[in-house]
Image (cartoon, rainbow, N blue to C red; front, top):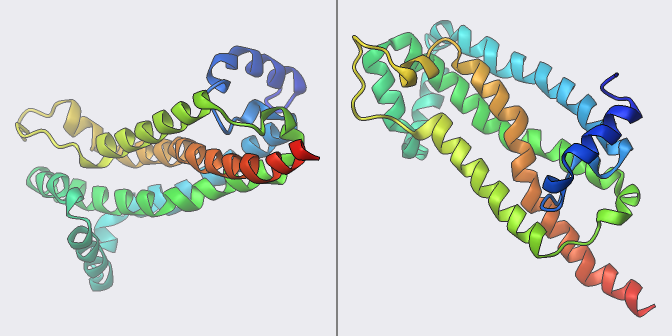
Length: 219
């Protein structure tokens, strides 16, 4: 079956019905939004390759420019929570450290710009989500859970640094932050925005429910 076919949409909606009970935003709330999400994923994938992967793999060349070095130093000074991993990687490989710096900064800067298209698309097809415009306790719990999952993903991908890194014996951590790290960043920047969009859409629906929804009930 084709990805954008109505059959695939209906099958996915049945399969993920349990998750939808907690999701304020879901690609399966309407077929039109489902197609929008698939198209958006394709565009964002291309942008992530151009803005994350390519710069990361040419990080050594980029780091020769003073402007790039100044920007990276400013980033780590502004957000010192990301410094320990960068310093640890410098002990292992200067290339790994520069690649981490370029890829992680690019990814973190793209999180919100990559989040807005999913929210915009949901609001664009708002009229087709009539069965899902109201939120309740399950959606509130889901919004919190999805947001915490996004924070956990940020911590695990960019912050967590083992204290017992042995350069002579590369383990899981050094493998994770090795040459494939920019590809992990692509996966991160494609899926984490969907988690961050959940509490935002929840608040939009809640405000709508408490204002326009209340007005509609009275009239």
